[in-house]
Image (cartoon, rainbow, N blue to C red):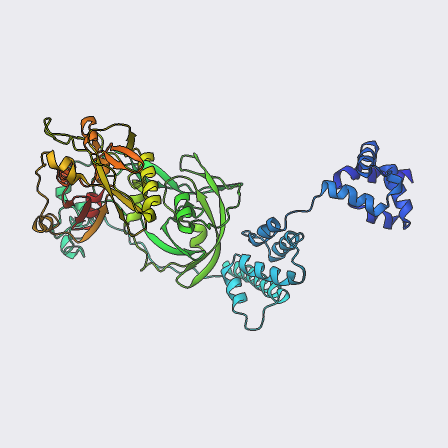
Length: 592
């Protein structure tokens, strides 16, 4: 008996007790007590000690064989998460070149701990149809008129797989007997033929016979020749003029190595003075939300950037799953990512499932080859327009939800030094608005717009105004204080005729509305006291230019005109900017 058990004793530690039932059946051992005794006698000192510790306070000999196996099995093989196992099952796709039988075997193995129960066949059928990864078989399965069962789906898939394999074998056998079709016989040219060269296109024919004699040259815009034979272009320097500034240009790396996948990502490049080549975009409905992707056939994986992921789905984003996928740039640098989404996509009535990588960084969302092979784009609807989203992405720091500051500019309010300071007591705030006023005061103090002071010679009461979003705007009643004694700044606001003249010839328009515009200008120390406000919470002085001061509009308009002078087709009216251009490229250039 000992000799029979030696091989089994070696297996105990590796297989976690699996195979015992087969061993006992082969040796015709049926008694439970005998099974337990054999198990304890051959398991070894280390395993016996483990069983004894797990069985405490009972002794191993007092526990049945079934309970012993369960005791150790629960320790080494904890029950896996049903959610994770089902995710792995629904995320599994047939690999390239993999047989249908092997794919189904993998699905059955993945379903072991999914607890599908009575719906197991339905789950296997659905995953087979969705994960078959072959258009012809998938269309055949989806087109089945009668209710499709798993057994029937498997028969159809294997039948089509076998038919495709047989057809290839037949085609290979017939390849040697196929006649060769000659499409063109090269004519031997004489020496005199070689000497003839058309000055219009460079071909071996006379210029009068050239089909390009009415063509317009893209180099000099003259008729009668192609750009490559343009004589005017020869006089121009061949080197292009390059801008020495960094700009985001998509550079792609393609390939997969093991678990690493090549993927495109933004890198720094250069652009010429010539008109840039704009990217092509397609809008895809992803899990019910429309997302704009840049089409990139050089990307192995489809990618959505983190900011777009969070903005698209808000507080209820799809669950991210960790992945060993590795993105890298053209030069091999790794690109960090948050994880992978398994999503449903809809384009032009086409539905498909796919993987979407949520990448860190500020690059565009990319529609890669993995999605392009599953959906067919209508190229007439594909757009190459450079949209506002691209500008927001490139200059995201300008559009952050934070108060900006115009550097290098400090505003001074000119008050006669001999003027008598004017101080007014705080006005009574209605109880219904008191809480909102206090919240706004706290917000202004947190942003550094105001700060509390214990003493001031100047103080204006406040006028709280309820806004549409039910928040309060606090305005100082400066007509009682600083406006009475300050020198009014004189600077003309643009007339409607001036704005129309600036925007003449424009076809595309962008409007920018500056947030808290006046408050982006800092006040000098002396001027801060003049705009002190008196509230039921005490005195606060403003650190920035404030609405309600008589000179604020003129000061701000003059500052903006000075800042933006020299930029064509940009109209400014206080905190509103209107940018235009005759063409898309010109408009974007002015906007940028």
